[in-house]
Amino acid sequence: MNEPWYEECPPSISGKYHKHEPTMEIHIQRCVYFAREFIKAFNLSDEEADILIGACILHDVGLSQITRKGNIHVEGWDYYPVTGWSKKGNGWDHPIRSSLVIGQKPFKNSRRIQDLVETHMEHWYDDWCRKPSNLLEYLCAMCDYLASRENIKLGDIYADVS
Image (cartoon, rainbow, N blue to C red; front, side, top):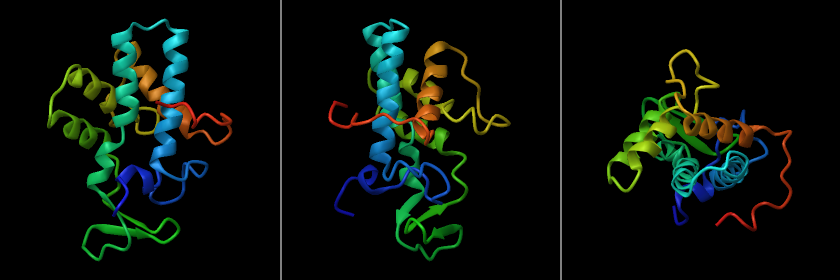
């Protein structure tokens, strides 16, 4: 694969969800858009803003370990012809996988970002995913949730996501 994983990978390998977001890159951009709105609305500090945006950028990085373009002919991998991608397992553990990837090379506030990433799926997997315990964790989960909503149109946000 020539491009970075997130430029090609669909946010839903099965194709069932995120139909309005053709790549992980677009999903990340939408998450960051909502993060910026929450940063303004909640008057977050610069450090809190950096943590929230970092978590929005990295929240699905664990999927890179369990997804591949093409049909992977290995036991435990499922191929989804609608997207042309394969996924190992059900992917429900990707918040933990993402957190572990982030923790491999610690950096300033990486532990706090890991905490946000670990709770970002609580609205879908409420029976096993750790619940947000503070405002930043909740906002990260909401950024992911709102980005995934097909009925929320953002216009041309993609020009200014740096």
